[in-house]
Length: 375
Image 1 (cartoon, one colour):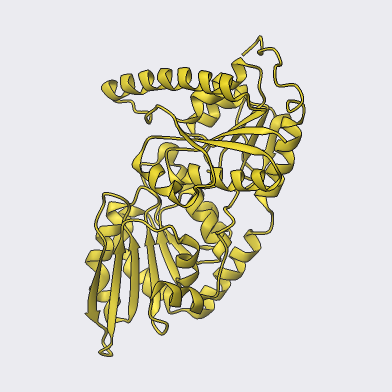
Image 2 (spheres, rainbow, N blue to C red):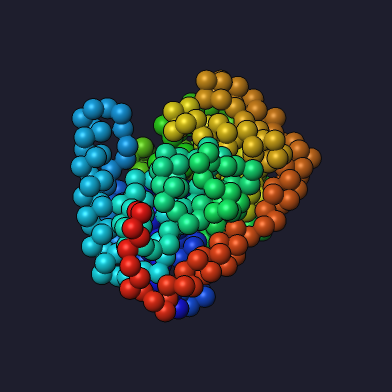
């Protein structure tokens, strides 16, 4: 048995694959601790996983704003001291980071003690943390076809995003019955990622009357602090009642995606991986201020692979027409689903588990190795 520290806090896109990896490691008999941030979204996401030990690490996100940058730097030093103590006390055999501001301290602390460390990047434009910390790693997991300058090909492995066991497609009728949606109406699901998307929430409120007229029911996950739960009812042109459901958060993502005919969403790597696993066609609206414009790169790859369409936020005026053209085109939806099924062939989780066991194997019988002199 090996001990692993998994740093995965800050956003759902970091936390969900960290939980997936923890599930896989525990199933193979290993011990895990997950490092998360002190943000509200992390606290909400971990409620379903009482079987795991979560450790909240000091830290805050990066910003070029001078005041916020000073706060970021101070928090990173606090995080490093915290992680040095944690690594010394828990004596892990390996450390895995999924990027973001929670990864820096534990990756540096691990290397200072000579521990093997691994990093995973799911976006097609690697983030700042992975680009910088990759030079300390013994393994860097990247999307197929992506490389980071200065990171040796010998330590690079190309894998997708590990998925939690609960993320799997279920029959649409069963999913709709479980969630309370109408069986005979088209269902549009709108997601803004774990942080929510104000522009997409506003689009639903603005366009629901037109969608309802055509008989399209909507479920909009607004994000924490970006709305409140509620239901709006309007008549379709046939006279039947059509509903828009607004919810701040859902922990039933697989059922929701399985129930949907079409999704409108941001283009984070976690969202895209869930769409692929649940075989749900989507129209992606990349967040234009995403770091290094990584969401646009993610969305472009998804569209090239035939999983759906892309509309820029500046062109949201066209979104309603695209939604109605797509959601009533059953032949096109079947083509998208077939392409999504093709995209989900390899198991990123199994590939990572096999590799990490090999990486940590030399430590489980000798945890008191000397610190790395070059770290």
